[in-house]
Length: 114
Length: 112
Image 1 (cartoon, one colour):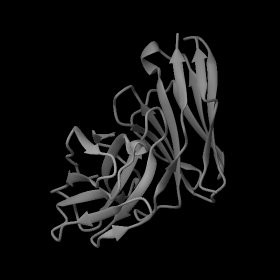
Image 2: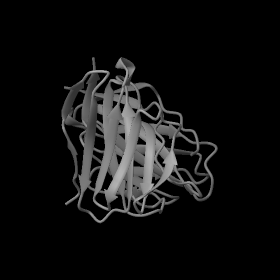
Image 3: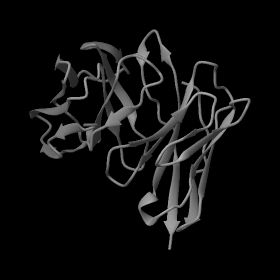
């Protein structure tokens, strides 16, 4: 099983809403990532979790709040977003810390902020 | 991660080999070369990676020059389903952790 599952696939939310994106993997991977991708642009790294601890935050605004409740799950809590935050949000996972380990991506959540 | 340079777009005839170049002239000795592709509106898909030797798997071959400053991804018999954006990434693990940094990529169009 090399699958990273993201839910929901699509999400429309208002600027005052609170919502969460979910990501799950059962490959025993200990590194998990959130990326943001705007249309016609490459994915941009937001957060990295390593062994359930936040190891990298790429200066992401606090309206995005990641959480790693256990080694299989990664959440991204959203609050007071702006229309410019509309994008495809991608989750990925890889086995541990090594550079010689490929990352597997989910299919993403397409978020629209209205 | 070291910066990579790729052509913005390429065309390839169906059934022919697609050769996608990548320049990574500032690569360091402990940095791996990774290739991913992204088909429209889907998540990136891992293709292949290598350090200094050439690599081959069921999807593609990766040719890395001896000085490691450039590489070529080869899709031996391109099909219409190979139309995608192909990303060449140079990856290292540092004290901050483990991350993949995407560059602009090459938009490959396979034509009948």
